[in-house]
Image (spheres, rainbow, N blue to C red):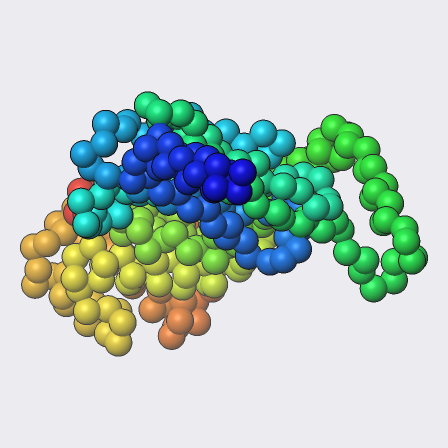
Length: 298
């Protein structure tokens, strides 16, 4: 009887070998911690090898399943073949959202001679851990719900728009008061702007006649230098008049320029006090002469 049992056992083993000639399957579980926090991924690595002479078509990674687990990704790699064998490695990346022990089920491979299964693997998932200040055996409660309101959004938008508008107004005032953009204006535009401010100040009674006339001379000096290249910064009124006589750069401006320089010297040295009407007349004559001067636009 014992001999018959031994013979039957050897015969069964031979049939198993014949059923799966040269087929080998190993399973390995890769995880970053043990126990693993639930929701974290782990990887089941299945290494399948078989005799290259055996008519076996391995399944695709997409066809493999792990019941009870959520598969995140799955793919295959092909190790180097050796010893007349072919091999294929499956990588199944999975997770589970329940704490406690679990069993990664066996993965089945259908062969021409039957079904071949991998070895099941055990894995343990842990739940949330207590933090400092938590009560024993109690989970932290959910945070209070903060209601959303469109009124807050419109109030925030109104404040942003209001502050932006205020900043724009302040910036505009500073630019105009400080003349920050004057450097990009033409000599004619700069001179006409200064004359307009001078006229406004005279009408408001903020300037006397002699002061307005000397300011008109200063506008003329700056314009002659910027528009025509005359040396006016350190030159006297007489020297500027001589440059005008010897130059033919601004023939239409010469009579008015010499008249204003002469009246300015009288107000400055002869202490002749012009009235506002005379100063206003000088301003208007200079305004007309500069407006007609084509050179000032460059």
